[in-house]
Image (cartoon, rainbow, N blue to C red; front, side):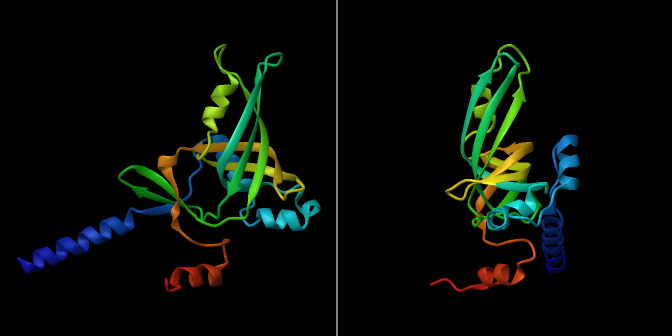
Length: 196
């Protein structure tokens, strides 16, 4: 009886640990193409320090959306939008749980960035409000683009290539606290620091 209980507990622990994490998976063919080409090791602060060095570099930055303002361009059948985001560090891992995939980003990041983007209307009823809903406040966006400039307040401007919006239920910035990829000293120091 005791042996069966121990085996059941061990098997249960193995099942949970084997099915929880995997590498980030883009959710469409266009995103897959961009992800394969994008640099994961260039961050907003790198661009602020030397903007001209990264003007031809495709980056991918995760950020929590702070605002999206959109307007119709009826003469072209397009919608123009501008989204401002707050960057968060991401280890490019996915957590699989009962509610599906969840992306666990760090509480920390490297400040504001923004992107201007266009959508083609999919039907006569599509409006700028649809764009603002798609890229709504507090959603996570995985943004692909090339650094274009830095505003006076330090906000990095990306030239748009692609954006994936993720609903609040599928990401968290409250469970992890780490820095840049490869910044293991900072990451482990934060993870083991005693709380006071």
